[in-house]
Image 1 (tube, one colour):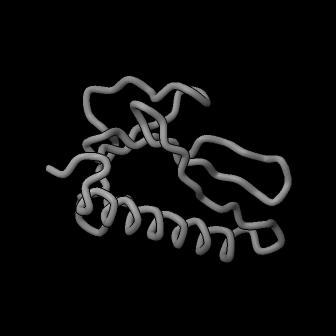
Image 2 (cartoon, helix red, strand yellow):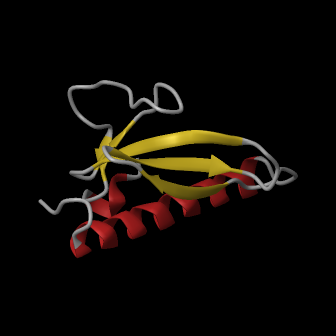
Length: 99
């Protein structure tokens, strides 16, 4: 399995982020056409990559955390990933595991 910083990891992360953004775009276009579509960005930390959902205003929230193995974890708070036995999916899964 590729680790954070590896070209395979970075390619999978980029593809996962694009897929997640496409799903958010579609959801807002279909269900909330008058609202601004939030953008996903990455903030890299020592242990996790924080996926942040933000609007052009000051609204920011944690969408998910990604660990160094590519597992996507729920957020418990702004700085803490929710402890779990397994990630909710992986950036390496089929179609980016965007279920």
